[in-house]
Amino acid sequence: MDKMSKDGAGAPSVARDAAANPYALLPPQAPLAMPTRGVRQKSVSAAGHDRISGSRAVLLLLTVCATAIFAVVLYQVLSVVRLSVLQAVFLVLCTLCFAWIALGSSSAALGFAAMLGRRKSALRIGAPDAPLPHRTALLFPVYHEDAAGIAATVDAIAEDLIAMGHAPSFDIFILSDSRETANKTRELRAVRLLQRRFQTQPRIYYRARAANVGKKAGNIADWVQRFGAGYQSFIILDADSIMSASLIVTLSATLAANPQVALIQTVPRLVGATTLFARLQQFAVACYGPVVAAGFAAWHQGSGNYWGHNAILRTGAFAEAAGLPSLSGAPPLGGHIQSHDFVEAAFLRRAGWEVWMLPDLDGSFEGCPPTLIDSAVRDRRWAQGNLQHLRIVGAKGLPWVSRLHLAMGTYGYFASVFWALSLLVGTVLSIQSAYTLPVYFTDERSLFPVWPVIDATKALYLFLGTIAVVLLPKVFGIIVAVVRKDPAAAGKAHWLLLGFAAETLFSILIAPIFMLTQSKAVADILRGRDSGWSVQRRAGGTEHFTDLLRFHKWHLVVGALAGIVSALASVYVLAWMGPVVLGLLLAAHLSALTSRPPAPWLARALATRETIDPPAIVAKAAQRHPDWTSALATA
Image (cartoon, rainbow, N blue to C red; front, side, top):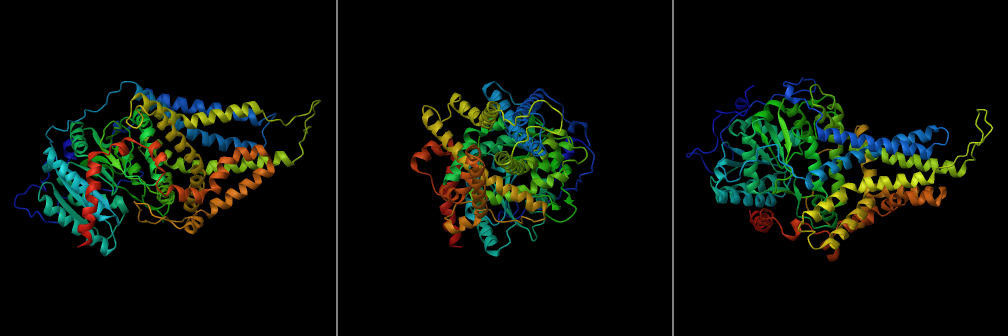
């Protein structure tokens, strides 16, 4: 099909009718068919197949070599003559865990090389001051969100678009899936006030669905089917995300300049963090995120992934290729696809469209969960959606890189299960070694005994090597921050290193907590327990310690049992299990500590570019939030 016809060229314009009512809640209908695309559909274009490029070959080579070396050395550590069954299980589990770590670190190594070298974008980047040849809709899908926060974001973006002179090329839609009347009343009031403020520059619309079929993916699909023909592209922003007008215009111009591209994903920076937990995430994304994102971009190339927000999509291509099926069976593994973004990107690639991540584009921001519990609740939904990908990864016609994206999303949760099982099996092996009399002479005839001795030197090397691979992305990020003179690092290396140390320490302690919550999530999903669709809390709150103890009770129980068993085995096993045991025993205290603002010295150590010099668009939205809160409270 011709690219122009895919874009809906010639479709009726929906927004600049001078006679139209500036206070209309919706524009005239501009329907666009969005047929369901099944998992058995074949690729419609050879362009959807991926080649093994240089960067992809390097990624696979580094990952396979590092994993193979780990497996061989661990085998040598464990085996004297031959492996026992339990040792073989331990070897497999540990290797599966390390493979996940090796893949991430290999990708970061590609990003490190790309950031220190001179890289040129494979796409023609549009200029923010160039005329826009087509129209773009900004979509805010909301579900029981803070209406004042949404209004403040829309206010800031609209004003900046007007200042740039590009407001006529954009319309803004607030797409509500809220169920409660009070929420919808505040949302509607906010839209009315925004319409009165901006009139037709840009137009602001509001749609509340009667039934929230398909959750967020269904919300977007409903808009495409009703109004998609009037817009050649659309940008999705979550309730806690925001983009500068300059970036919005650049994305629109870039998509127009690259007709083979269906989706461009930006890499949002985290903003608005007030609690220690959020500040730790913000520091990690600011310091290590650029290297990780650059690595993704290096091997994703035109087969990138989609994170569901802060991205621009070509409307015609999305409608043609990304209509999601409903999986057979009941939730959690059946029904509507929950982690829809990965699948939509894969379907676009299957249809021959390109999907790109552009990490160098500035002006993309989002919030983050304020507490450990909020992050765990969100992670439970993500786990369910990613495990559904097991039913899609084998879909006909998908390029292998898209299959890898889907597999990685699923494997990330099973990696926690493998880690938990490896710790359990390792502890059993240690107890077995401590309390079972060794067999020096096997059933085979031999003149010499078999001495069950673990190679301590190789074990130490393996441990240190594993730690080095785990820390590589962080080290790469710190080096890049210093070399590029990031505002958070320039002239203040001691603060940056202190932030690195603090973030690493908390990561070590919090990792076992997420290991157990993710393992439990996988078990619940495989047992058929649906996560539902809970409201996401955007701002932190003070939890009673008894509530924290209730939430973390299994962490405490498992931590206590692991500590006792490890101590009975040997002091060396206790030292090996120490970080895990300590993190689990302190789970409730860590949750309480990280849900509060950090101490001043720690806040300084975790400072980022966004905290030192807040982006103008973010500052503007934050300044107007109280005014919108007051305006909607008096409604």
